[in-house]
Length: 200
Ligand code: MLT
Image 1 (tube, rainbow, N blue to C red):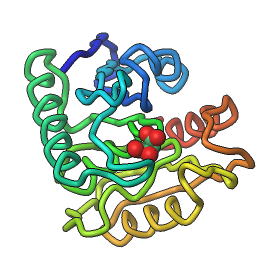
Image 2 (image 1 turned 60 degrees about the vertical axis):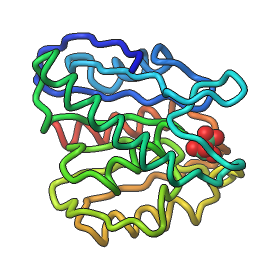
Image 3 (image 1 turned 180 degrees about the vertical axis):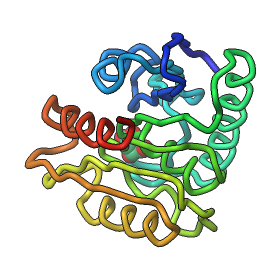
């Protein structure tokens, strides 16, 4: 997969997953804000929708092509596995940061691949799959950033995602912002405060 890797010093790796129409460059600045000392593995989605990169196909806005979602989630998991060998980082210390479509593939990694992620920061995610056999997430920390007026990702999606993750043992914190689908600086700062509390 097309990607950027930057070496850090603290042994953690931030897996950056952009939103629809984005690239692997989009979230680099945000990652430095969250943890300037971590490795960065920033990936471009392999699917194109009218020329816009995405991490998996969708049938309509908010309606996912489930077969492609499962295929692309495994593809990403395999890619991270191989990247850990190639760049020599700890596969057990990977923290995803995803926005919108990127948050949804990160959620899909959690739902379908045990030990895929140590933690995840999900900006405006949805429930990736209501029929998944979700693995044990007892050692996983998740932060969800959600907008009270997010028409792309209605509040009940974030609430249900939180409940499904918690039901399988994940520690989840959801922060609500009086905004829509956009990713704002106060939201990034709130994610940073949560992250710093966990990885002191
Ligand atoms: C998705 O398809 O992942 C969601 O609708 C969010 C988006 O990318 O617009």
